[in-house]
Structures are given as structure tokens and as C-alpha cells.
Image (spheres, rainbow, N blue to C red):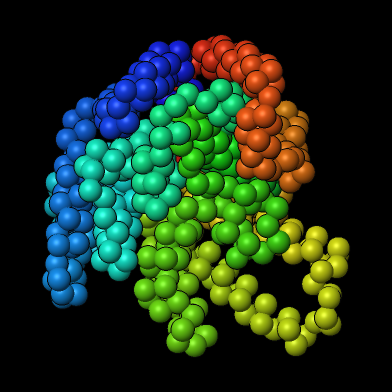
Length: 492
């Protein structure tokens, strides 16, 4: 079930919400158990055979967490932590990287080993990382969760399960113990509906609307065709905007769904295309993954505690592994390495600016505009590796973007073959780009809506009706398309 499907919006969500609040009047634990069951059913709709894998992962990590807390000595805790994380990573490596590793070994050794096609379970990276963080905190901070139902709900909670955000137990567990979570709240429900509708617009109208232009260029390059400079830039910009609206739209919908159920999810986006440097970009893009990589990889590697050279190495390793987390492909490794290099350059430049530039120069309008443009260009170049299915295709597009394939051919064959027009694509990119750069921050807009709806029942009722109409219109638009696209991050 996609969040954009009528089955989810018109059947699944109303049933889940109604039963949740009805049970919440009598028993908070029963309501939490219902939400856990509903979340497992949501996952089973996608991949019934892997529901056992998800449930097994939950049981395994809950057991390991109990064993860690039961140990009196640090060595005993460390042994259980090591066992738990090792099993988690082995399962993740098998399902996500087994075919990639075998293919590379065959290419390197000239062998023909095969284990068949291993299907990637949806959301395995998210629920694995969520639980690794829980085990690490059980070891370091002694955190625990005495109620298996709450732990199972924390891991499988359906708004985040298949595409994030990466949850932290400290953000979620206290909410499952609050009585207010289980009482229907008109303001929260209406504000959540509006936030969900905004995310739906991002996905159905903006992301899916601009995606054909990215697909035409990247798919053509993957098949050995060479885009001209205009096509290459249009394809790269279209994907840059498609990815943003697709993933931020999902995150907004997840936040809106949770708010309807009185549960607060962490933000995952904070206007990342307004960033003035690459460090700022990673504080704004996929914020929960950035926090996880910082807290559970970069800092354990040593962070910035062992000098500049070690700090840069730790940044590079963290970003390479972060790239590999996104998928079993050398393109993702190169994308992560590229961002690792970006971060090293950013830190070196920041240090140099303290001596090279006069005080206050970096706050000037011209400097900030130039910093923004350079940062965005670097991000766009990185997205080419992220989107391309082959290294050759990525290099072909980047080569064309430099102007090396400048042509007077006004037909633009890659677009023409897909039945697309350059002018339409350019207008799509311009309008979408203006929204990301000048539009309001959806997090702040959501907070404003929650505050206002909490104070005015009339406003909450009006917004409920308006958002319902918008959602129905988005469903109709989605139904007129040849196929319904899944969210991009479902693949990770």
C-alpha cells in the first residue's frame, strides 16, 4: 500500500485510526498492540513472505536488549552487543549486498558463482539501523523497554517503516506511555491531514510530474545514448527536484499521519537546497540518517578528537559507508566518496577563511549567494551518480553538462524520443526550483498549523474539509496516470 493509493487513504487509514482511538478509551496497551498489528499488516501488504523476517528481527533485538541490561559487567554487555549487531549486519549484508559482492568477485576472479537473485526486503535498512541504535544505547546508556508491544511498535510503526525517518527510541518510547496519545485530538488530526495533503502534493504533482524528464535523460544515457548539454542539465535538474519532492513528500506524509495519531516524528528535511555549504546541506538533508551516521559511526571512529587528518579520514569513511547504505552499487560508493571530499574541502576552506577573509566578509550578500550556488552545483553533480544506473551513464551526463557535447540540434533526441518538450521541462524545473529556494519551510508551516488548529475548532474543521478535498483531487490525478510510482527511497 502506497500512501498515495486509495486503498491506504480510504480504507486502511480510517480503520486504523478509528480502532486505535476506540481501544485507547479502554486500554492504552490494547491500542498500542492494535497499532503494532496494523503496522505489521501494512508491511505484509508489501512483502508477505518477509513479514516473518521483520518480526524475527524485532524479537531478536528485543531479546539482545534484555540480555545487555541483565549483564552486571561491561565485558558481558559488550559480548551481547557485539552478537546482536553482528547478526543484524549479516542479515542486512545478505539481503542488500550479497548479489553485489558475488558479481564483483566473479568479475575480479573470472568465476561464475551464483546464489540466485536475492530480493531486497522493503525498509530493511531503516528497521535495522533503528534497532542497532537501540542496542548501542542499551549498552552505553542502559536504556531498556520493558513492554515488548511498545518495542515492536517503535520498530514497525507504519509511517516510518518502509522509507524512514530513522527513529530513535528516546523520541518514541515516552510517547507510547502518554495518555494523551490515545485520546482523539481534533486539532492534531486536522493539522495532520493538512501536512499529509502537502506531502501528497509534493509527491503526486511535483515529483511525479517532473520525473519523466529525468527518466528520459538518465535511461537514455544508461543505454549508451549521449545527451546534449541542454538535455544533460535538464535531466540532472529534474532529478535533483524529483528526489527532493519525492522524499520530503514522503516525510511530510509520515509526519502528518503520525500527528493524526498524536505521535510526533522527527523532521527529516529543513529546506536543504537553501544550504550555503555542504556541512549545512547535511544538517538539512535526511536529517535522521545524518544524525545516525554522526552518533554511531563518525564519533565512534574518533570524530574530530585526533587531529585534522584523522578528522578528514573519519568524514570520508563515514560518507562512503553512508553512500553504500543507499544501495549495492559503485555509483552509490562514488556518490558517498564525492560528498566525503566535499566535506573535507568545506572544513579546510572554513579554516582558511579565518585568516584569508576579513571579519564579516562571509556574511555579505555576494559571498552568501556565491556559496549557495557552488553548494547547489556540487549537490547536483553528486545526484548524477546517485540516479544513474551505470557508471558510464553518469560520466556521459556529467561530460555533457560541461558543454563538451554542445550541439545546434534543436530536436533534443532523448526528450523527443520520450515525447517530451524542452520548454515544458524547463518550466517544470523553474517552478519546482523556486518552491525549494523561496517557498516556506514545511516544518515551520506544520508547527504553525498544529498551534492554530489546537486553539480554534472552527479553523481545524475548515482545514479538515479543505485538506480532504485536496487529497481526493490528488487521488483522482494519480488514477489518471498509466502507472503509480513508488517512493524512491523504497529502494534503499
